[in-house]
Image 1: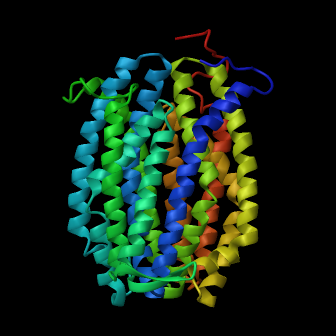
Image 2 (image 1 turned 120 degrees about the horizontal axis):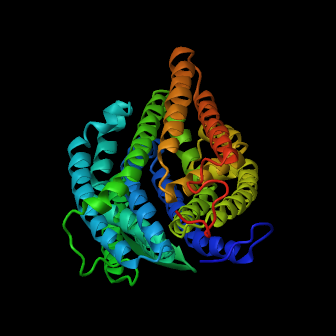
Image 3 (image 1 turned 135 degrees about the horizontal axis):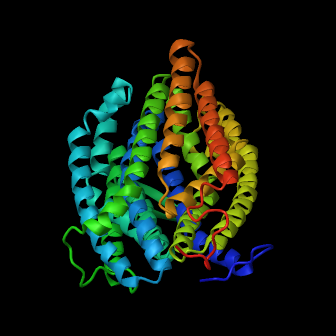
Length: 468
């Protein structure tokens, strides 16, 4: 383990953080870039197409985040085993991750395909675009087994410090997605390149083409990451038993269950939130969808650092190094706040420019710009809660984040948005105001937990020299 300075700057620790964070940030950046391209390509089909695709986005969060919670359970277990030097236990846990990937992938395939025709109605999508939204949702979620592999196996690889492999797989998925979007969304047309007029094939599938492009890309990405995972020197499940192991699954589920409930509860909140936004009309739905897409790029530093925080905190806990946990927390928060101030400032300045990338509708651009500038001011505060929560995930402390996120989501964001939009008839700005209040509550809650020292399972005075 890296020796940590109790006071002052540790260059080795800083470099460890950067080495783990940058591939995740780049992966998030690439994924967001593709999301931008997807939204822009679909946006050329009209506001109705944008609304049809965006209306089911929160369901995407719900499904992905529930599967991600399973990965968090394995991340906490494997990162701590790896930090303690128990490589064999880490590989045994990997075989259990394979079982959970297969089960979750098949279960969510059945659920998503079976409920695809009902989702647009539940999301209060306007009747004229419900069939389009249902068709897109069905195609997008057909390869759930492969999507589960990308999420869970990628998280397991990160737990032992391999953040580059998930990044490379993400890059491949995104490149394939963009190429297939270009071929499947539009009709056959003439394209001029360097003065040459070329005929480019196009399937002219529209929104269906966007869904098919993503689905095919997920299948290829799932196959690639499964092969890499199987051959990985640190966590390959090759030669391990694939029977259910209670001694491994129990602590994993102890971490995963609160995290899954948190993600499920908050994502159901996103569903309720989006449904109320959708009820405000097509312009609000389009502005909300595009603003969410734009905003996601500016959270990349935050979530890249969170991945590093979870892995390094889990490794430090496995090594019983309390000094390193405290040094990690201090350094991560300083880096995070600086990055989020920069990203928030950029978002505030360039909000109208970003909106015009995805829409030519002046009312959509104006509304999206207002809400983006509102949320830009809250980013540094939200960054603190992201880091503390990430460290707690890596150390297996997921109960408190569950409580804080559920209370904030349903007690402030949903109730507040319902009162503002459904009772007082206010618009999208009021809904995003409630979202920002939710984020500020999380900041206060996690800041109190941080200052009190309760985030650290080893306590305030325990270091690597004082093992239990």
